[in-house]
Length: 98
Image (cartoon, rainbow, N blue to C red):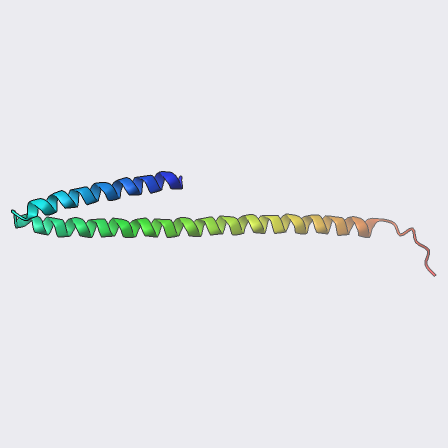
């Protein structure tokens, strides 16, 4: 999923950069477009911020999933160890006591 998201991000950046460049070129002759350029840059910065937030969120979720898998594995090992100890305790003692 990450490569798809990275590709979408690259496509967005290329498109917004292209739009800003075109509007910036037109703003040299039209004063009202200068405000539009500023707002497009603000929107672009905000979208980039959201993408960074999403990436950080994805990284945290991945860490939590890994921690959960490790905890499950530890619990399984503990259960196996407990089963083994119970079996050893329940085995009759065949040794001689002196």
